[in-house]
Image 1 (cartoon, rainbow, N blue to C red):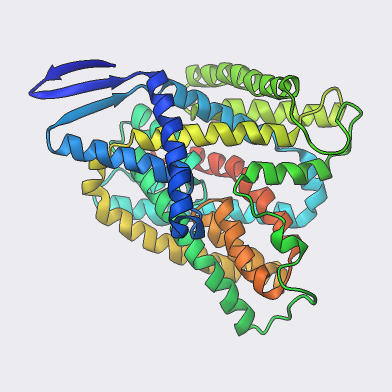
Image 2 (spheres, rainbow, N blue to C red):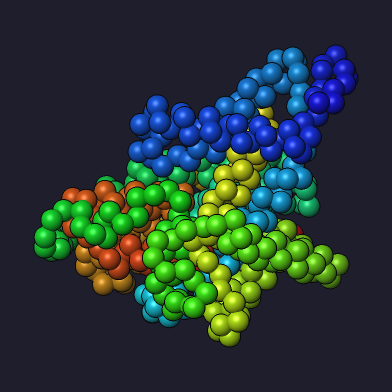
Length: 430
């Protein structure tokens, strides 16, 4: 590890391999912490956030006291980020939209509206506190409906390309708060809706098949299972239990790397044309094309489960490394505006969940469960949505429609629409 004594303080440079190793270590430290602290599991706080925050807090304390400074090489962090969003694209099959029908498309449209409103709420707050209006987006749809992955991607972009100091730290902080808030709000809102409107519950045992079908936090794997049901079986796919061999993993990893490689070329030429976008967008859209050409022409098969596994690994390392390198001291002057933004974001998601999702999606048990789930991923991530819906269905019975629509939209479709909303709004503000 390189080091230098500058201005009376030791400065250490953590290279890309050391940063990746630290990310892996702190990820599993976060896993261990979740096993010891039930509240972390209850509110669906992911292991990368738990482990990464430990490092970032220690680094902030050391720097604040003039003891030592650390500089992290984020090269591999960027690689993992792009690979993760490639897996999002490779799981975005048009056949899922056809299987979900109008309900999936309509719910996806609602998330695009929410992304726009979240930014519209936060941008005036940022301006009112004398901040760059782009900082409002860091307290809007980037961390809220976007979650930690989008926060890490756009936060870095805003700092590097637009010179917004503290953008990454602010986005990660808001995303972490949102995961707690979403888990807390969703269940009680669904309960209130059911009791206020005297909604009839499904018959049978509590917590039926749909209620217990999606307990795992590996959301892309869950959606992968649904994708396999939506996409017809192909001759080259194994029968029986899903198994991943080395060659099978390599084939799907190759598709991820191909999408990342061609996507980087797309991003390069867009940048030359004066269009600045996060590095992952070009790769994600190439991945979407690869998946849907394969589904349409049946020239090759993408294994959604295997791709989901790759995505889980890439996301875990990317988020842990991003949080490890947070510069938390940059949040000191942003604390009050971020608090105001978060209060308004919570109020917004409750209003949309009740007045749009519940009322316009049937005003029934399914729509009440969907409204509960919207609070989860509208402020946090899809696992939070599943936790909120689980709390309702365990008590009152299954909702197959809600457990199909919400994970599909929340796991990857929302990333596509949110990226488009952010890009358009940034173009207006710059």
